[in-house]
Length: 208
Image (cartoon, rainbow, N blue to C red; front, side):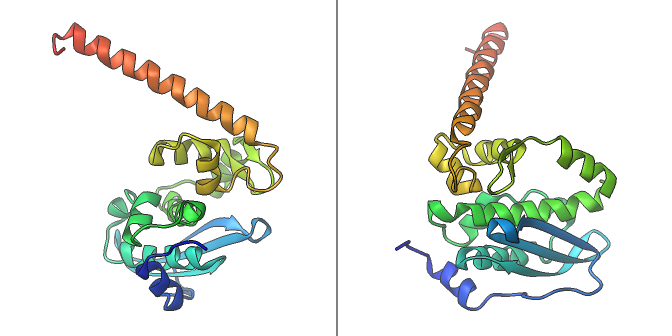
């Protein structure tokens, strides 16, 4: 049995801002019913300020809690402020989530990002092209390489199990776990290269 914080339980039992906004200015979506979890986020704006937010979600208690707390976090913020919110912020605001449920906070961040993309001018055609070009790593949960890389970067993930907990990739048939391992190893090489470049720069400028 997973250990949930009181705040997670509260937002699951008494979710805030459930429903839809009929005249929403922005709508963001993440996940899919076919993959087991989905979220639709509605935003009402006054200029660039978010004055109302509601959600509809299909998923577990952690998905409900993550969606609920996200609406509270963004109401009253400007779009540029909301853009800075990460899945780590959502989880921390809830007092933490079990590692196996961190993908619920990622889904919240992705729905918010989807809504903001529409505001900042990404057309449906551009989105369709982008989605077509993105490489699907996990076909069971429709998780792209870009989503995995972003989760690794934001949360400093180091193992395949952690990637599965945060993105669900590899959580069904498991055939993509080898590719996820390759992505993680590429990330390690990039970090080591960047670290070497930084040291050389510091030596060049006499700061080491």
